[in-house]
Image: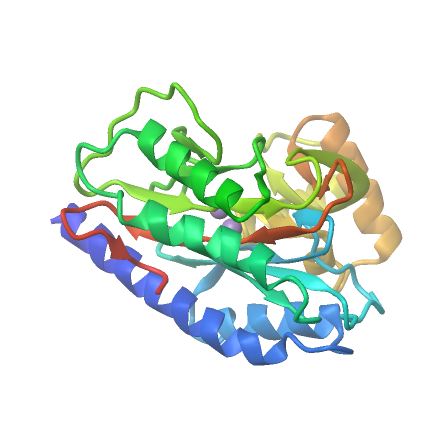
Length: 297
Ligand code: MN
Ligand code: MN
C-alpha cells in the first residue's frame, strides 16, 4: 500500500528531524560560528542517509526566516541574539519541517514562550473537522496574550510528498480560510511572534534558491549548475553555499543570475520584521488525527 509506505516515510523523516532538532540545541551558544552551525546540522541529516528538505535557516533577531550563511561567512552568535533554527528533512520525498528559538540573553523569555505556546495550542486543534480559521485564531490570540504580534504574512502550510508548500496555508492571524482538516493531512504549523510590526519584508540578501522550471540553457555555466541542482536537489530549496565546492564563486553567481533572469530558479530573500522588532518562531510538522501526531517531536 503506497499510503502506508508514505506514512512510514513521514514518521521516519519526522523522527530524524526531531533528533537533529534536539542535538542541534547544544550548538546554539554565544560566539559559535553560524557557518559551523549550519554545516554541522546539515551533516547530521546527510549522515543518516536523508536529504535536507532545505538549507538550515538560522535567522537572528529582526530576521524572521531564510538566512543561511554563505561560504566563508564569519558571523558569530552574540550574547543578545534571539536565534531561530529552522530545519527540514527529506526521506523518500517525505518532508518534515521544524523550528525553535533560543534567547541567548535570557531577556526575551516571553517572546520565545509566545510562539511556543501558540504552537502548542494550535497542535491540540489538529484533528479532523477543525477549520483552519480556528487554528489561525488560536495562534493570533495566544501570541497577543503575551503582548506581541503574530507575523501576518508568514504562514504554516500543508505538506505532501515532495511538496513542502502544498497549497493550503495556515495563517498566523484570523482568516476566512474555508479548509477543514482531514484525517491523514500533514501540516507544518509555525507561529511567529514579533515585538515590532508583525509584518516581514524582503531584504537585499539572498542565500537560498530553488529550481522551479528547468529548461535548456545556452550559457554553459548555467547549464552545468542546472544539471548539478537537478541531480542533487531537484525542486527542493538549496543554498548558494552548497554549489560553491568545485565551482568558482564567479561561475555560481553568473549561473544563478542567468537562471533567475530565465525564471528557471526563484530566490528566497532573507525576511525581516519591517519594524525591526525581535522575532521568535516555533514549528512542528503534524499528522492530523483524533490524536494529533507531532511527527517532529
Ligand atoms: Mn520551517
Ligand atoms: Mn515551514
